[in-house]
Amino acid sequence: SDLERSCGMGVKRDSTGAPISLVVNEALARRCYDEMGRSFCDAEELSAFLSFLDETARVCADLPWALAWIEDIAAQAQSPGGLARMQNRSGAGIEDMCAALRAYAAGDFRGWQRVLSTIAYGDSKFFEKSVAASFVKAAEAGGFSFGSAFDIDDKLAALGFHSERYSSVTVGGNVVVHPTWASLDLSQFGCEGMVLSLPAVEGFTESSFAEVKGCLVVENLTVFRALCSNSKKGLLVVWGHGRPNEAVRRLVGILDGALSGDAPLLAWSDIDLGGFGIVESLMLVSNRVRPVMMGEEDLRSVDASRLLRRKEEYWADMRRFVAHHPDSRFRDVAQACLELRGTLEQEALLFEYAQEKIRGLFGA
Image 1 (spheres, helix red, strand yellow):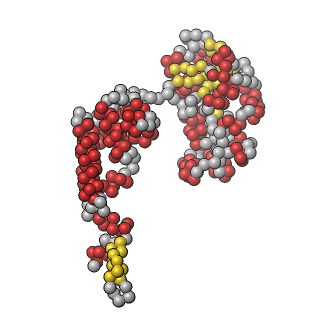
Image 2 (cartoon, rainbow, N blue to C red):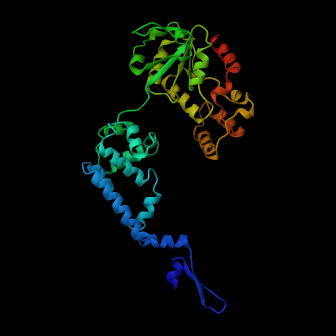
Image 3 (tube, one colour):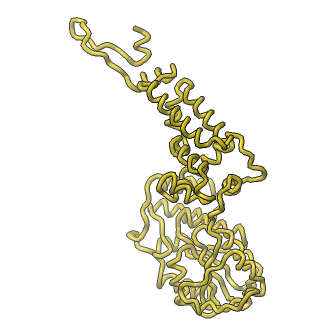
């Protein structure tokens, strides 16, 4: 019939016209059934899904925002085609969200995201990487009041989570610095350097760095250790722990006003999208910060076999970077990465190449 054909069904017949079998266009039939609020296993599947939500709601009885979110999800699932949309929704899956809600409602995680994540998934980092943003959105949708909280970290704090940002910075090199609480000969700490908390960084003033002839902020620990083990007098080396946290940014801000006019304040990261972002974030803190060993010349100085190969999705991101950041200092080297189909880790430029560059820059 016309109805059967519109639903993706038809009858296969032999040469005499006798029916042999029913032919189903599964994709079209699924779409038609979903539009009628049904699926191939609709009744059983929907019942199990609603029971699962109901069990989660019982655990969350003291969380009005969670109950409101669960009620909305249940209503969406029961609408035409709703169950299929639940399965294809972006962000964290419903099962993962409900697992987080159950652990959250029980309260045993005591405010620590990674404890909750371990309780809910057995993976201490899964909540932070895959669920936290959806968790905040669920609270918003359920009517939770975040007050003046603006970013996701502030909103998680409003929900009772402790901040798990890493707010420390490591300093080393061959120079004496003078915070208000001590005088530190950083050469005595060797390649390990000295870890400073944010309150310790606040003890530095512009007069603390009078003996510093230049500063180099690096992304990776191996590079930090290599530089600290072989630096001449006056060089301050800072390990930024990857993407700069508050302690790193605060120290760079102090160095901006503390270093003498001819003392360079440089940043060295991987030649890749992450490295570009790290250095650009430091340049927003201090207009004295300049990238070093992150240009096209540096990229092309190594053998192609030492470049890091990436998946196509990464190159799509790199092309977007080039297109959307025409004024970036890293646009030319990003185009070179695209041409060579590779990025470069800092460690590839250790030792001779980096040492010669640093001697030229710092006289060290």
